[in-house]
Image (tube, rainbow, N blue to C red; front, side, top):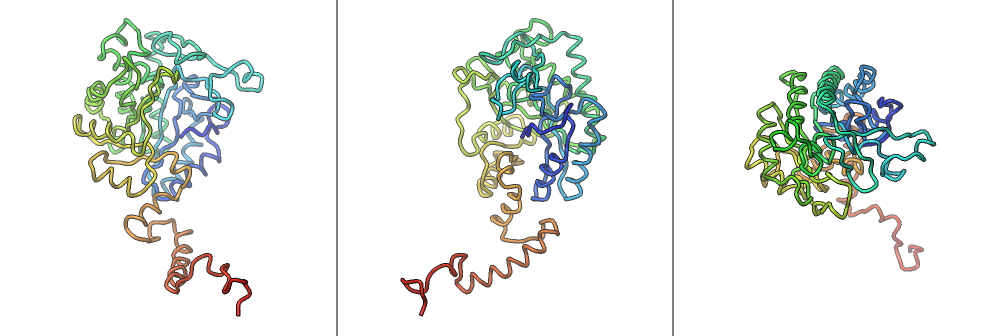
Length: 373
């Protein structure tokens, strides 16, 4: 989840150490840092993390070391926002940056994409990328992957969803090119597949590659599930280990975008179909809030992994609580600094429950007047 909290020039700060570190303390199996830009103009906002220079390595390595030291696998999401870059932080409007933003120190920058088509009404028209620029972007992904590995990340999640650069090349809604990166679906896949090959080439064989995709565009004339299955087969052939299944985001126009119907586990039909038809490991996201719900998705064959975003923001200890719901209360997997104390408290709480006491027992009067006898 983008936190819009980086220092100048996309550097990680103490905020990211605490934010991501607490997820590791909370029992998450993998902790994946937010969308991290492979070049400066590829940021969603000026507050996004970056990995376009060697200066970014050590601040992120500090995070990766802490996450791993507390039993979680450190991962990072590499991204290029493309035509959806130069955006305000949500609390400043969440729209395109304006001159007014520039006056308060957050100026807009030029955005790029496959074609000169804005992402929605009122959004800037991107510059269509040249062939030389596309090759430079592929190199930027390769270099960012190298830096991520140097920083100690063991999972890389390529962000190819939600209308960002790779998705915008894949979708016929945003890609109207007539060269080898446009037109046929094979051509529209080309940039994403070149990026995957470049990133995979920088990863040791024991490191894992995820690809986050929008299974459908949710817009008339956009990508459909069968397109995605064909794409996933090509991703597998190039070394992608896990498909991170999401949806939508190709446009910002809410009149045109049907927006996939939101509901609990609402991406499950997509992830299950991809898993059954294209094979390979698939992860599920989207309003997963309960341990039994998450386990049911796995048992139903809808996914191999469960990814949590907002739910972990709400409850960083969610994995520990989920274990208690599914397997019974135990503090063996908690970090020892907290687990020791919580186990001791649990013993006291059990005795109180056995005695019929509740947290409100002492506040309930012994008689209607509340004076006792």
